[in-house]
Image 1 (cartoon, rainbow, N blue to C red):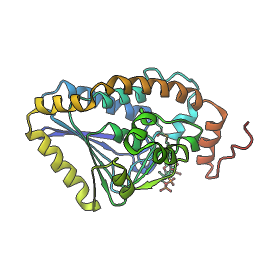
Image 2: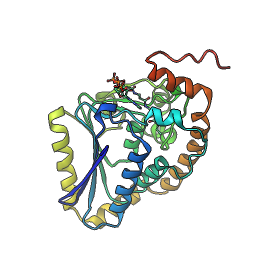
Image 3: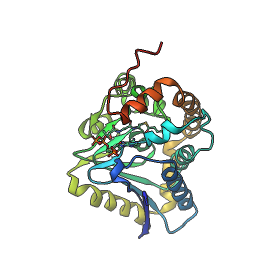
Amino acid sequence: MDILTSKANGILTIEFNRPEKKNAITAAMYQMMADAIRNAEGDAAVRAILIIGKPEVFTAGNDLDDFLKNESAEVGDRPVAQFMRALSSASKPVVAAVAGNAVGIGTTLLMHCDLVYAAENAKFAMPFTQLGLCPEFASSMLFPQMVGYQRAAEKLMLGEAFSAQEAYEMGLVSRVLPIDDLVPFAHGQAAKLVALPASSLRVTKRLMKGAQAAVVDARMMDENKHFGEMLIAKEAKEAFTAFFEKRRPDFTKFA
Ligand SMILES: C/C=C/C(=O)SCCNC(=O)CCNC(=O)[C@H](O)C(C)(C)COP(=O)(O)OP(=O)(O)OC[C@H]1O[C@@H](n2cnc3c(N)ncnc32)[C@H](O)[C@@H]1OP(=O)(O)O
């Protein structure tokens, strides 16, 4: 199973489990995560959600082979969109623990989590423009809001990778920890959430997200429209092909 889910002591743990492909996320994996988060909404036995990867990699983002095979611009109700909606509207608290690379949606999903912990080896990147794409998961709005326009532009326009320490300084992660402490600490924080009154946490989260929830939803739809169109354009196909051919993409041949 490329996504492992387990429920224990009030915590639903969702684990990326495709290390041979750096935990790249396929449509089936998005669907499993969307279903798990949605099912948790109606399950009183789940009081917190914990998202983890492997010590060497959180996730390399969307599977580029899936992207390459994609032939329709319509994102609509695809598993990735279902996952985005499920996570961004989750009423229960979500904790994420990131070690190693967190690329693309591996970084943007964190903007929808409540507590985000990173190991010292964590490395974040949103290389959308390098792939001929544009930001997703409302990151074009949430990231500039979080870190300021110019710092966001460096990461979203140049797609430059950044360290755990920089992510902490920008406010994307709550705390940086030694790798061996990462998951036990994140799990401990989730256990604290489990022990708190669920109703208090639910209302607190709703108040913190506030009126922004609808705006986030609208931004995701707008981004997805552009993203879908760019996914089938020649620049993106060149970027995906170059990745698998282990060469630099050549965008100079496109106007
Ligand atoms: C809506 C969502 C949008 C997005 O998420 S956009 C972002 C898409 N993601 C990316 O562009 C990242 C692509 N991957 C990488 O840049 C690198 O990987 C890493 C930096 C994450 C790790 O580099 P290294 O440690 O050198 O590993 P390796 O040799 O590149 O990869 C090991 C195996 O994993 C496969 N793989 C890695 N990432 C992906 C991916 N995103 N989609 C499909 N396969 C991937 C490779 O091909 C290879 O496989 P083999 O061993 O068979 O040659």
